[in-house]
Image (tube, rainbow, N blue to C red; front, side, top):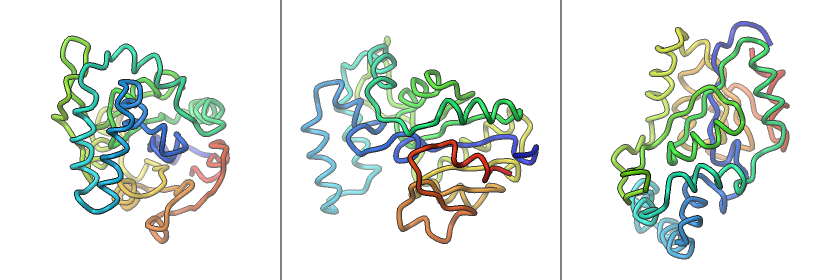
Length: 214
């Protein structure tokens, strides 16, 4: 690694978290006792009854009544993180590189994960919370291309440009970001990511990205 990269932006679901049943939104629904309803929504989405964003609004309603404090405490313990996160974050920090976590899922899940693993900042879709309790609304979904705005906002705060960002993700909403950043690493990627990233890697150890960060 060198000083070319100032920020590494990580995706959460499918990248730092492995497995569909413990993503930022599915685990939150499970913690609120609404797993079966969440699965029914996802099955309908797969059948093509609505898109993933519409599904997220329906899933948001399933969070109503969940204390934010419970998500903050339980999410880092019950999700299934990829190996090597701490080592990777520590190595990047030694090089003066900031670690940003951005997800299209709940920003509250991203915050819990980032604080647990020592990432510097986080962003994502803003699910409604009133008096410390999820209220079932989703007033701030970042959508298909919102990660670009999240990274742009953070870069303006820390004095970095997109050319100085390395993006790490598995595909989907990461692809528009791949096209803007100086370097991109498709990690455990889906077929839609082929031809879109600088590097491609399949591994269960996040530290394997380190030689690829410029």
